[in-house]
Length: 116
Image (cartoon, rainbow, N blue to C red; front, side, top):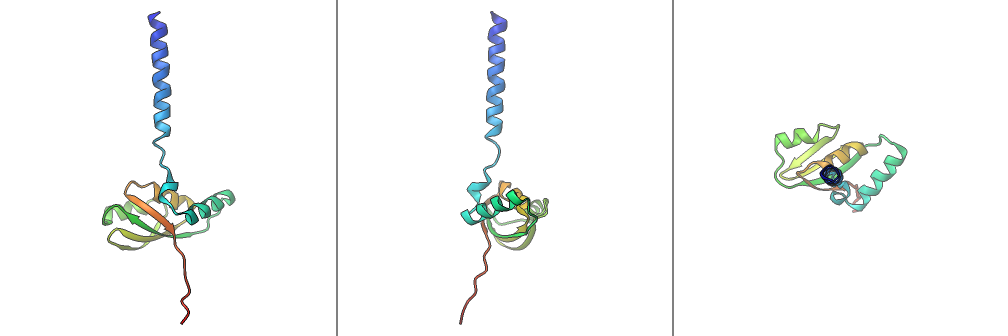
């Protein structure tokens, strides 16, 4: 009887551990605007290497160490002003960037023509 209870407890513990591990996978989508999510989904389907330009915000002023961490997975950081940055990379690199703890938000960079 004790062996059965121990086995049930052990199995329950394993299931709980597996469930809590899956919830620790970052939800990249909560850090991205709708246009960026759609762009990444499209590029993932095609397994495209197209480079995406983004504008982002970190939770504090971006240090050299943070910038180094941002560039680890083929992300090119173009400019940094305090906690704001512009960067580019393929969809995998941008997802990596969104997964960093100190990144609050990323949006798809757009170019607008100004008519005089």
